Amino acid sequence: MASSASISRPRFRCFDPSNSYPATPDHPRHFSASPPTSRPSTPRVNGRSSGSMAISDNSEPKIATGPGGYVLEDVPHLVDYIPDLPTYPNPLQDNPSYSVVKQYFVNADDTVAQKIVVHKDSPRGTHFRRSGPRQKVYFESNDVHACIVTCGGLCPGLNTVIREIVCGLYHMYGVRRILGIEGGYRGFYARNTIPLTPKVVNDIHKRGGTILGTSRGGHVTSKIVDSIQDRGINQVYVIGGDGTQKGASVIFEEIRRRGLKVVVAGIPKTIDNDIPVIDRSFGFDTAVEEAQRAINAAHVEAESVENGIGFVKLMGRYSGFIAMYATLASRDVDCCLIPESPFYLEGPGGLYEYIERRLKEDGHLVIVMAEGAGQELLAESMNQQDASGNKLLQDVGLWLSQNIRDHFSKQRNMAINLKYIDPTYMIRAIPSNASDNVYCTLLAHSAIHGAMAGYTGFTVGPVNGRHAYIPFRWVTEGQNKVVITDRMWARLLSSTNQPSFLDLKEVEAMKKDEKEEETKAQLTVGENHTEAT
Ligand SMILES: Nc1ncnc2c1ncn2[C@@H]1O[C@H](COP(=O)(O)OP(=O)(O)O)[C@@H](O)[C@H]1O
Ligand SMILES: O=P(O)(O)OC[C@H]1O[C@](O)(COP(=O)(O)O)[C@@H](O)[C@@H]1O
Ligand SMILES: [Mg+2]
View 1 (cartoon, helix red, strand yellow):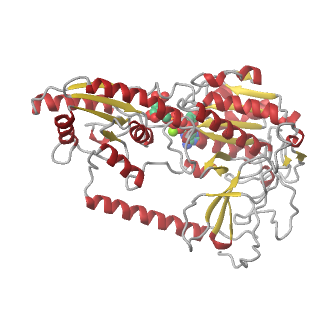
View 2 (spheres, helix red, strand yellow):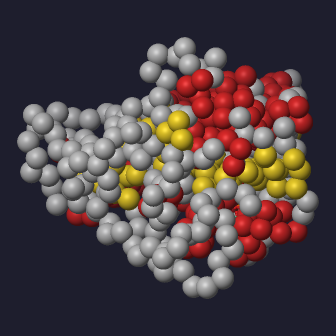
View 3 (tube, protein in one colour):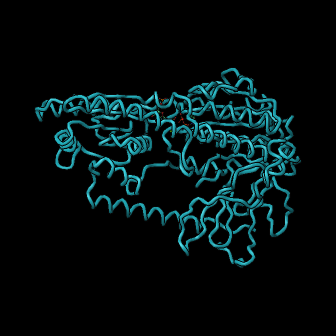
């Protein structure tokens, strides 16, 4: 229910088990929005469970509300299912590099707002717990046995995140036992492990790919958690995209069900930038930069010949961010096609008409297309999936470039010169650039601080510029997509001058749908969240 607390002295405080606040009505020990589930009679600290445990199958979301429509979407903590765990002073306070920092530890009440553009009367809205080091930790350095796994497709920066987790654990928290799991999730039960030290990972950020290897599929929860338990691992760092975070969430639930003192921390990876809530994903910046080289080549080729068309296909299965940003950055692109914006070929306002106009006016043009765009135009879609269950796409770039050639030679009797460039794997197999490297460090450190502080079942990431701990379901239930009724897409249309392929009626209908979705989401927030007591 909505809060009736006085505004001058808010009753609500965020309880952070890792900072030393006493349990008082002002500093509640539990977010009671979701009633605590039954607990195991004897909590396990990495002891293999032999009998049945009394913990329910899925943890409830930890949601609390405060005055003014404040909502905290908190992340799970080990003490939620293993009460009375001992705490230890954070070793960072004795670390010569960090001990001089003024107020190094994060304030217990700090949370990060999901929306920062607000109106005078709008509710304060959803918040996430701010990431960073806590005064108290739930692991002694000598007891930590961490592991790192990378899953899904490649992305620039994977090696940097691995390096920074290893170096961060080692140098900040004095952790000495860190294992690399080879070849993605299946590596837990079917591959060797690699002991990781700062020396082993020292130079890996200069290389593309992941030194651990990766894979799709192979998520067998019971085998993975058995392996975690058998090896005595108590911190699991999982680097991967939406599929990987879903997998991490299931691992967390199973660990919790078994009552193990094991934390699971997700670091979001997606070259497509399709993970919701976070500002952007690591490697995206690098990919957009690398895409410029392909676009430049396409432009040079196109403008050097008569009726030249440079056609570049970029990654972007469901979300066209790489194509959109690469287009906006380049200024040489005349048409950008993304999955979110349907287009058509023939007739007035269609792609062929636009191409012909540009060829007549400028003598050449550059097209950038995301791999997931226009899939609906292909006669038959591929009904195949990869090992993770992702739909396999047809090569729409090849298909469209051939259709453009056919259209102009057969129907318009125009000689065109089209060069098709497919740098999709090139833009994700390279090392991360300087800005992504720094970003990877922050993500790795956030994950380490959260894990040491006993948080679990969370993904890290910047929300409006501040790093936060985000419950798994926020990043797995939905996808970040280009909103074609937003200003950014309008900027793109105005920079390329391409048609929007939509009529006014369609735009109005889209805007209406979006507004309804937003209102529905706001109502749901109001209905589902109860006051913390
Ligand atoms: N719903 C799910 N539940 C459990 N594991 C999943 C789920 N979806 C994907 N995974 C696992 O996550 C890993 C990576 O998923 P994938 O979709 O290939 O890449 P990404 O994480 O980059 O999206 C794979 O090992 C896959 O089996
Ligand atoms: O050929 P692969 O390795 O299966 O990957 C292709 C897919 O991987 C991506 O680069 C990223 O996908 P994930 O985030 O699922 O790893 C997509 O853009 C692309 O469709
Ligand atoms: Mg994915």
